Image (cartoon, rainbow, N blue to C red):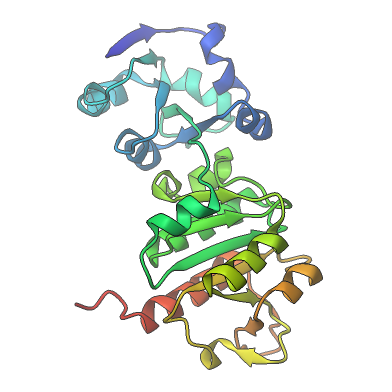
Length: 274
């Protein structure tokens, strides 16, 4: 059921979350996230995640009304002029549509392993805190058939606002596991489930991406551009793997590197060919 609520100011108490877009960590602590823009909001409305409210212009309310009507839960639709919505984000390029969603309960590792058919393909994050990069990496995961993301204790959530935006809403369908001990999780994957774990490391001396087979159960670990993957996590993996590069380039943005690694896994597994 939709409840349309016209507003001409942002003083309504239920709009506080939209006025505090620069506090994404606090939002995540409360178990909520903000989706921004047409495509991301549409994907949220088409997802199984709970939608709490939306803030949009009259024009977008008319466009999205059928999608809102199909939702099973009660949704407060705050309808405001675009100029008012633009004061939240501070620039004039906003599309005039946002929505508030509830972060899903994270899966356990055993639940992820149970639901993922072989050959499994997972991605793990170590020390990755840049939300934009996490969002891009999540989108790459969705594009190339990753069955789940394992977020280590030193990484940020893929449900932070900028991560959601840069994932283009693909995070809404991505199984996510949070672990308090990524090293122990890697050992569990390797020793108890025979999943080969590769660290994506630009200075790997033992092998390059072309040297490894990603056709069997695999997990790829990605770290930050600045520090990369921690030594203790690298040591827990089966091997470090590098992308060969030219012209004295020694590393790539993690979103770009993730796309290269995941496309290679996708290609080796048939590349979507029937």
